[in-house]
Length: 89
Image 1 (cartoon, rainbow, N blue to C red):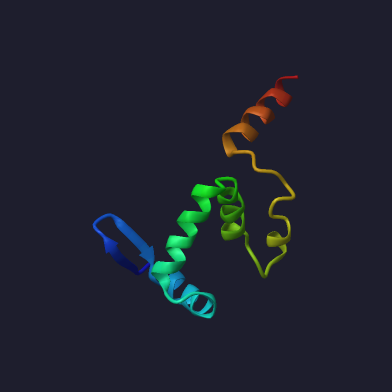
Image 2: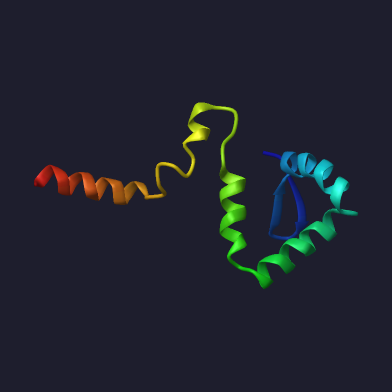
């Protein structure tokens, strides 16, 4: 993964930035404006952060991508605990 250093501890995936630049240039003047708008939006409406995260993590182009959000969001530990409880019963 190549990264761009914006500040001391702020690294961004270079490939993601290059892909996003095309979209950003169509809607915004530059990357700084896009990031500023993003921060303004999440401070005014924090609930959209979850929606953005789901959209960013959604897989596309494969069968498993169609199942995103349909199966659930339980952690691996939770599933293991439930399996252990059902085995004991």
